Length: 146
Length: 64
Image 1 (cartoon, rainbow over the protein chains, first blue to last red):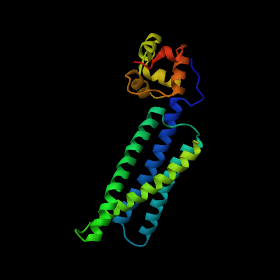
Image 2: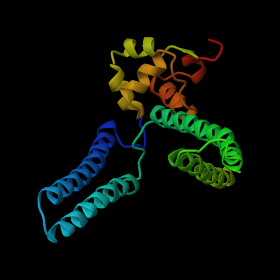
Image 3: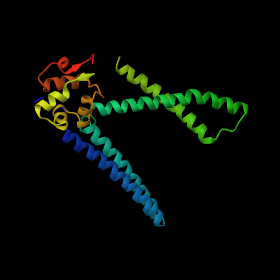
Image 4: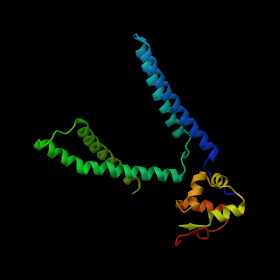
């Protein structure tokens, strides 16, 4: 039988369960804290909210800790390929919106032809920021593979 | 890319899950390979060939 250095599917499944439970517990803790703060009153609700936020952050830190500390792939290569393709399509969408949207936004605002809703302006500039992040990370990853 | 993974797996009497477990991938990945919906990495192709005790080119046909 072929031997692989990678942990078994059972181990990977177990690690993924830990990760999901950690995130689930953190998210549940946050929602419970919000629910308590809505139903209760007084200064103690602030502490409940902070506790919920702490549980939420801890949940995600737990997720990252299991992911990083176990040192194994939690997703097999087909799932990783699906992620890569989805990320690539997302990048194409964001770049397309930025390429066509940003010059249009500047011209429309400069000529006062129409009033651009604030959320549209926020989306376009937000996507512009994402494009800059993408370009920076692209350069970083390219250097690692050169 | 055509391949003989399904035929060889069935000849060994294995389920997709058992083969996936043996080479370190999910049942869905084995299923996608058998249906020509996903071309495996070199690492996985060699793992499958090693498992079936054959050469990669015996298992996968790039002209298919």
